[in-house]
Amino acid sequence: MCLRIMFNPIFLVFSISNFKALSVGAVYKPSGHQPWSGGPNKNALFNIVHIKSMAHAKADERFLETLNETISKGIEDTDLDVEHLAGIMNMSRITLYRKIKAISYLTLLELINIVRLKKAAQLLAEGEYKIYEISAMVGYSSQSNFARNFLKQFSMTPTEFMQSKIAKK
Image 1 (cartoon, rainbow, N blue to C red):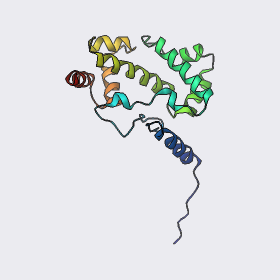
Image 2: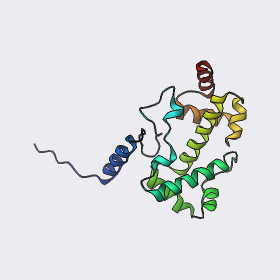
Image 3: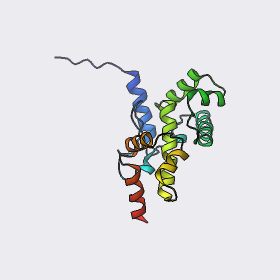
Image 4: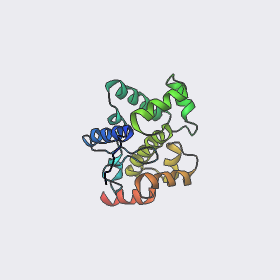
């Protein structure tokens, strides 16, 4: 019995992206998954892929840096969404979505959430603010939504994360 193996270009692109990502210590996952380095663990703050490292070319790197700065400037805005960012970046919503998807395998909303949660983790590690203050500072109108997204990204609640950082100090 002969097994026939079909060529899959999507699998090839994904494999190449993973190979490139491993050189910078990150793993790309298709949409719906989080970019982890070696899986979720207690040091997850340092496992989030740097936005810049997702770029395949210098132009993509500059684009992602600009996008990251734009998201960071408007991080407190709960209305920060694809339409708003597309206007700021002088692109149509569809073009921006396709460009982000081509570079990172993430949707723009996933990218916005990653930037917000990364900033939240930094603020939690500092220990200067309460969790509800941090959720508002990073643009979440609902603390429960913030906690749910934080748990999904870091495999621990914001409280557990804060306590683990305080225990290390």
